[in-house]
Image 1 (cartoon, helix red, strand yellow):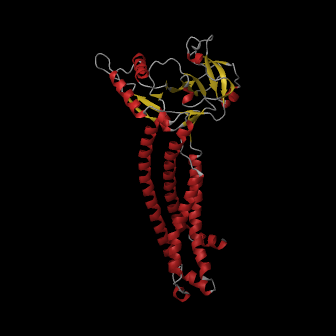
Image 2 (spheres, rainbow, N blue to C red):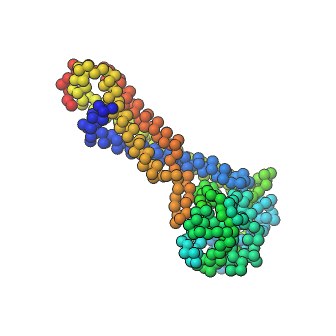
Length: 407
């Protein structure tokens, strides 16, 4: 090993150029592998996270800017019109449940609390994903009734808070808070550690940690939400239900696109996979070209070191020993490149967590052990052309033909 390191130290510039080639090709390969992993991870993780089969959930995406006023100018969809649309859907289809959720903000001046994310959820949304508490209680039906909870001091909104939030502000069950809009809240429960909820639409697969967040009941809606989720029975066609929902929306001049979660995810999966496979093929082409270039450079270096190698052979160095030294240099350079790139990528992606304000969002982009192992295997394969070329060419050389060669 000392001999290999000493030999590498004599040719710093050439080795640096080789190392840079290896690093750039592996960086591109890692980024492509992470993107492909994200596609598969979302496709597998969302069904595990849901409480219901993805084929039993129809997601309706609402264009809230659609809808026309009498003079023909778009003025958005009123909540009254949209509620009529929902009532018609319930009446004319076999849906069992319709729910929505919303990301909002919460600030308590009294407690000097910073802005925190708060998830507003519909009543009985547990069929999508259960919201579990460790202390206190979860939501009850009355919590969604404005007669019992309207944000006044007498009838505050119940609040479920994460454990980190509880510890940071020393909050307990029954603690009362008020926000900057003079809305009042009472801590009803402490969420289980590592609780998660969906950040945007479900098919996007991004989950937000609730450990330092709050969950509260969906307050009275002024305008429709962008996404609504309809639960359908197992014996009902999700595709037909989605088409029926779109048809009803047309009657009310509301623009809605509806699909089952499974269809939406499959469509997105196929699209993302196709795009990423194209980049993967390009990445593999780059790796092959780098590997061939690496073999050419190493072979040229071997001939440029003919005098040194000839002297070593004349002094009794065996063919195997010199070959080990030459191939060892190749492996050490590529291994160093793999270690540097792996360390960089782990630091870059971490556990696949984005931060928005103080929210931790799991985006499925992370370096897994499988990708690290694949990167190591790829690095080894990059060495093969150089090693094979050295073995074939070097065994034909004789000391007397090398002495006098240029260093």
